[in-house]
Length: 103
Image (tube, rainbow, N blue to C red):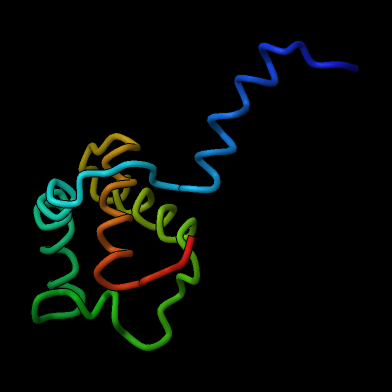
């Protein structure tokens, strides 16, 4: 069965998304989103400034996609109401500051 050209072309954005899970982001806005929605929970769980959530031994994330999935799960859990683009921005900010996963 052959897919029409339009159907094949519609898959291109998915391929780009898979390669770059969070796309273009505003890291400054991402920090503000993170601080507003994440810090209080992380401080409650780990104390201090909450950053131990990201730096503790045995953390279970091993790549960028897992980080994006974790941010999406937290977004749903705390009902922060972020759009997928905002989840991606927060994941990118966390990657830049804590995880340093390669592409």
